[in-house]
Each structure stands twice: as structure tokens, then as C-alpha cells.
Amino acid sequence: MARQLWRGVVFACITFCMIISHAVAQGGDKILIIHGGAGSVRISRQFLKLCDNYSITITGTITPAHGTAKKVAMLAAIRAGYAALQTEDDAQLAVIEAIKVMEDSPAFNAGTGSVRSASGEVEMDAIIINGTDLGTGAVGAVRHIKNPITLARLVKDTSEHVFLVGYQAELFALNSNQMNLVPTSSLIANWTTSNEGWTSNHPRKQNRAGTVGAVAVNSRGQIFAGTSTGGLSGKMDGRVGDTPIVGAGTLADDEIGGISATGWGEAFIRYRVASRIAGLMEGGMNASMSISTVLSGMASRIQDADGGAIAIGKNGDIGFEWNSEQMAWAYSKGVDIHYGVDRGEDINVPLDDSVSTGSTTTESTTPTTPGGSGSVGRKGGIFFGIITAFIVTISVV
Ligand SMILES: *[C@@H]1O[C@H](CO)[C@@H](O)[C@H](O)[C@H]1NC(C)=O
Ligand SMILES: *[C@@H]1O[C@H](CO)[C@@H](O)[C@H](O)[C@H]1NC(C)=O
Ligand SMILES: *[C@@H]1O[C@H](CO)[C@@H](O)[C@H](O)[C@H]1NC(C)=O
Ligand SMILES: *[C@@H]1O[C@H](CO)[C@@H](O)[C@H](O)[C@H]1NC(C)=O
Image 1 (cartoon, rainbow, N blue to C red):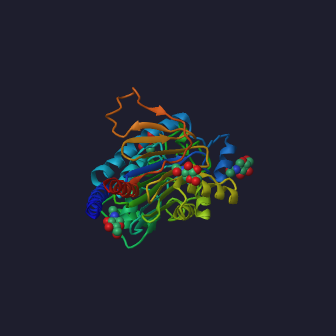
Image 2 (image 1 turned 90 degrees about the vertical axis):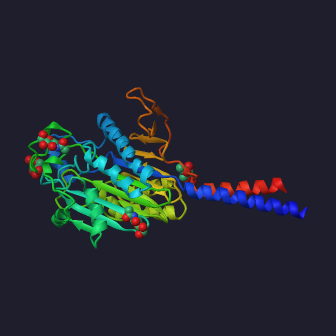
């Protein structure tokens, strides 16, 4: 009887070890989530008054045509970013590649497609954070950079500093011999044809196309978060929003998760939005609930404060929530892509675009409440191993 018990224990141990090593080798889920800005984001009051004077109506909502343009670009961004997770298991590359696609698309207010400041200039902010060692690079109010996210990475990797701004940040880009400066005209949003002839005394309608951001985790649980923005229409020159500020618009910490926000930057800084979301997640609340709790808290303290955020918790749970009218979001865990813009919208397509053929769509719209789904990941594998070993022991004995 004792020998049988002994044999059972050995057998269970072997099974347990096999399952554990399998779970470890497989690692956690590789996840990439992005956003392409929230609708109904504020612009400067001064600019609105000026628009009133010229009977120009600016609405905060993302129009259907604009939403479609965002969706197309978000799919391309997820595919470009996820390829880096699949082949290199590199969360930083996933974030950078996804953001670059969105910066290069005029459907978003970042990089190419940025809006004009009060003087008619373009001023962009960007940040990238390594959640493992909290290494951070950020740039503010840069005017001649095609991909500010790349410059942010350069600041992180090749300077002693975290945050460079304005003209000196552009000099840093030039001196790196890795980046060129581009003319402002090549970056300005052309969402309306009436954009030409813009002056601070005679504004033209501009589409507030939205900040972009990404959070990724690789199979080893390394998290990166990045955000890039073209600022607010008609903002004061020199104004920097929440995007490049750690704990306001962006945060990454392997021990908690990664967060990227979009919205009325001034309110997001004042309320320390990303930092508060991280605090709730650290306390055990899921990503989705943490975001919505903080957004409603912000709105109760700061009048008209709106926007949204995406997040991945350290255990792989996904959150995307907003208190503005809309937010463009998309994510993938490797099999398919989920994305949407309007509340309740959750469209599902294969990650591998060769699977879906042209316009014959395999899309299915499942109206669900916005919010992520939990993930089994690494912990699930270990739990499964223990349960299996237990069952095997019982049955052998
Ligand atoms: C709007 O027009 C009024 C009256 O002409 C003028 O006093 C005001 O300064 C203008 N507002 C802006 C922001 O230019
Ligand atoms: C992030 O930080 C960790 C710890 O310092 C480091 O090993 C890793 O190479 C960094 N990742 C990148 C892409 O710089
Ligand atoms: C906007 O239009 C101008 C003039 O046609 C062009 O030079 C510029 O490249 C366009 N910008 C974008 C972002 O498409
Ligand atoms: C997050 O937590 C809330 C409250 O406990 C719950 O209602 C919601 O379903 C959870 N969401 C996910 C994605 O697990």
C-alpha cells in the first residue's frame, strides 16, 4: 500500500513538473492594445470663441467617415505591432511600430495629421516607458519630427535624461544622426479643405482627430506603454498636455501594468489619471473597473473632464473605458483583433489579414459592454498544473 502511494506521488510530481515547464516555456499571453483618441475632447476656449465669431462649428464627436479611417489604420497598427510580439517577443517594438503606423496616418492627431496651435504651428508630445526598469523617454512641444515616438525612445536610450522639450529636443534629434527634421506643413491635418489660409485671427475648422497610444506585454511579462499626440486645436504655443507626463497620460510598471490615456490633458494632469488607475489595479481591481472608477472620479472633481484610457494588468487583464462620447480602441492576444469606436461596438476580425478576403467580411459585430476580458495566462497554467497533479495523485492512489 505504501509503495503504491509512493508510486502515485512520484507520478504526480513528474506530471506536475511537465505541466509547469510547459506553462513556463509557453509564458503568458502576448497582448497589444491601442487607442486612437477619444471623441468629445476639449479644445481651447479662446479658440472656440474665435470659431464662434466666424460661425465655425466644431463638434467633438468622431464622424462615421472619420471613425472608419481610424478603424482601418488601427487594424494596420495592431498587425504591425503584433508582428513584433510574435516574431521578436519585443513589447517595446510592438508599442513603437503600432504608434508609428498611427502617427503616419492623418486619421489621428499625432505625427502626420497633427492639429495647429494658436500660432498655426504644430507641436507634438510623446513618451515611451519600459515597465521593467521604469526607463522613460519623453519629448514635448516638438515641431518638426515625423515620428515623435521614435524621438522619445532615443531620449530614453541615448540621453541621461527623461524629458526633452522644444527646439533643444529637435537639436538632439538632429545630432543623433538618426533622425531628420521635416517641415510643419507636412504634418498638419488636412481633414477639411478649408484648412489652408489658417491664421490665429481666422481659424478654420479642424478635426480633432485624437491622441494615439499603445500598451504591450510580452510572454515574459515585460510591459511597455507609449503615447503620442499633436495637442489641442488652437492651444497656446508651448502648452504640453498629459501625454508625456508619467502618471498623468502614461504609465508602465511590470509589477502593476501599463496604461495610456487620451482626453482633456489639463484635467488628466490635475487628477493624475494614470497614476490613480495604477493604484486601483495594484489594489486588485481589474483594469476595466479601475479606469472607469478613475474617470468618474475625475469628472466629479473637475467639471466637463472627459476622455478615456487603455490598460493591461500584470496578469494580462485588459481594460479600455471612456467617459467621452467615443474612443477608438483595438487589441489582440494573437488570434483575432477586437476593435471599436462607438459605445457597445466590438468588431472581431482575424489577426492574420490573409484569412479575411478583401471586402467579403468575416466581421461580426457583437454588441457587448465595453471593457476587456480576463486572461488565464501564466498563473492559469500553474493552477491547471497543480489541479491536474492533485487529480492524478488521487486516482493513482
Ligand atoms: C469675437 O468678436 C468680438 C466682436 O467683434 C470681439 O470683441 C472678440 O474679441 C472676438 N473674439 C475673438 C476670440 O477674437
Ligand atoms: C527594459 O529594461 C530591462 C531592465 O533594465 C532591460 O533588460 C531591457 O533591455 C529594457 N528593454 C528595452 C527594450 O530597452
Ligand atoms: C496637407 O496639404 C498640404 C497642401 O496640399 C500638403 O503639402 C501636406 O503634405 C498635407 N498634409 C498632410 C498631413 O497630408
Ligand atoms: C471587473 O470587475 C468588475 C467589478 O468587480 C466586474 O463587474 C467586471 O465584470 C470585471 N471585468 C472584467 C473584464 O473582468
